[in-house]
Amino acid sequence: MISDKMVDLVKGSSVIRAMFEEGQRLAKIYGAENVYDFSLGNPNVPAPDEVNKAVKEIVDDEVSTVLHGYMNNSGYEEVRATIADSLNRRFETSFTENNIVMTVGAAGGLNVVLKTLLNPGDEVIVFAPYFGEYRSYVANYDGKLVVVTPDTNTFQPNLTEFEKLITNRTKAVIVNSPNNPSGVVYSEETVKKIASILEAKQKEYGTDIYLISDEPYRELVYDGVTVPYLTKYYNNTIVGYSFSKSLSLPGERIGYLVIPNEVADYHDVFAAAGVATRILGFVNAPSLMQKVVAKCIDAEVNVAAYNRNREALYNGLSELGFECIKPEGAFYLFVKAPNGDDKAFCDVAKKHNILMVPGTSFACPGFVRIAYCVSYDTIINSLPKFALVAEEMGL
Image (cartoon, rainbow, N blue to C red; front, side):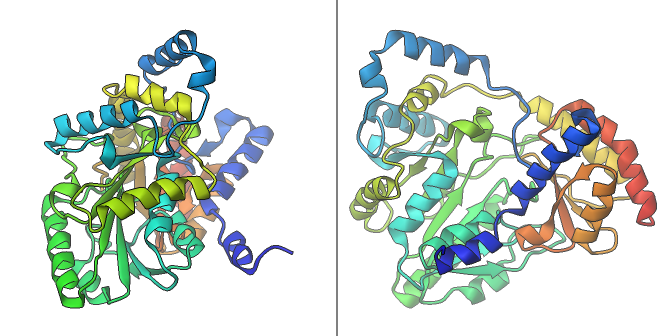
């Protein structure tokens, strides 16, 4: 029999993945072109040409026994130095390779940092709506997830409630901006207020509270919006990054952690993150992909394609009477359920072969997430089906 902990985790297994698998089933029945699967954040925009070129060059030029062999658990030193230099150029920071840990994507990085920091019973605060896997990640290390309820008018964090929820057991706060699922970017004003609250609470309780910035969507922003770099606002910040979206490489599982020198107990935290990488079974981030992203550090995906999708979907649904905030980043539209019941909304949409994820999965009932990282044709062809949904739901 499986462990008691896994029984609970299986029950709460990802609704997003379940919807994705349902989309594959429906595609076999009706044809992929007749199924409008907006469930999974799986980039449709291809990886930049530099990526395939880098893969070929590295495989052809490097000795295979070296390329495919082990390295330091934290990753290749030269790759980490390249990433640190890039961050320093872009954000006026002063990182070195000794501030970077290569990870198996952002998910692997979050698990590494939570394994590094949490004792049983430690509290981790998240702002709803939030990526549902955070629940499982925190539970895996016997932490307690504390949820700040959403401000459904702006989807900026509810900072009044946040301040009240911090206790002497608060070990970490996870922020995700641009946000999955809302697409909202946390403003500099919001970031400064979060930092100020945490500074005051650290002094009040005599504890260290780590701010974990989960940033897989940092490069996917629109209309000139700027995403603040959080290490510049709060010393106890650890950044988790992934190339899954910025280079359209979700299946390659490559990312990194930034652990600044200013972090409390930096030397212990950095060393523990390397050990956690090993004992969690990752051992190290994929060797080939480490070298690939280093060669492609300045490459960019076609964000304009996502923006085209964003405009078409937002304008199309708004004209049909659906309500949502226009996303500033990422590739998700968070739409209000016409009758307030997100699951019912998803059920009606499914009758028309439209697959969406209920906001309940993100601790924000009454909304649904639509991932627009699909083809432009899928969005355009789905709008007549959304019109039928709108009619059925009385819009």
